[in-house]
Length: 444
Image (cartoon, rainbow, N blue to C red; front, side):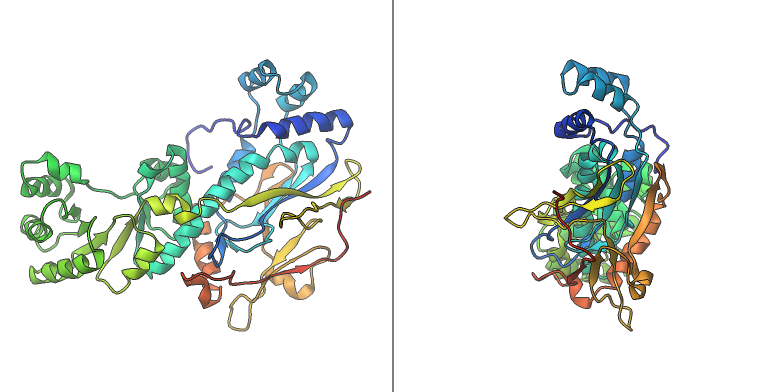
């Protein structure tokens, strides 16, 4: 668990049809059939070269907290959502199956089985919505954040999007961004809940509050020290920089520019700071940045970026289109698994059977392909398998510090071909190679 605060039940973060399917399956006798569900996406958002898996840790918490409370059960009964037999089942619900998948922070590609949920149909089917809700959101933010931190080329990025998102989504977005390389967040709840470094100083309102810019800067320096960051574009930029150095001295920590032609202004401010002897004062830029704007500032004397709206909306792609599909089931609770698959037009078919995934590397440590298969794993691919155990027999075994996911992402991205970080449109940087051991399909 990332925080010491009590977590609430996640059981009603569920689409109604999952409970009605459960009711019908309980009546038909099929509810206890052993089943395997997989989470994957059929395609990446247009122009993206790779995806980033984020939210796994939150999924583990959500499954652990998937418990129906008495008020929830009373409400389901009052609304006639399900019958009494189903309510009795839900009252005792605990997930006792297994979940394995890609470790958080890993990259993925079309068809990658990023999460596999195995248990009875009754236990597994009702987890669909909450799992997809978390993974689709967090992975979209992480993918955008990864592109931004890559474009930043080692300069720190700060997540500042809390005012542009639902309050709960803002915390999740900060977490996902941190996994993908962001250095800090402005959101205090994200810092408290997930241990992410927080940062922030003052907005234009603080300057406007005071009788002069000098008064505002003096008050901030007196309160926060000379290492603070002063916002210098409320009135006249050059005058503000001059005043900032006069008030704070040459050891002023940083200045922030939030409007205008950031490339031009950063050069002017850098020159002015150096002339005033504040050659160690950093320049932070904000103002509706995205990965393209960050890349355009690569040659500018900028020391860090604050990113808000584009980050928390996935930079134009706020979801990953991940799906949760039944790929195998048994005819009895303990019988052998039979592959099943959806057959439909429009690119929405699926591939049956439980799958493994591997990403072999060439002699220089660069990923060659995303290999997804069924049946026995070829010996040469075993060292490159991607799945790790997350929940075993209902017990969480895969919880880890957020820093581990962050470090993993940087390693995984570094192992991709160099074209992965290009911002120009293109196909996924790795092809997904399917190796199907046996024919799959819906049994008669």
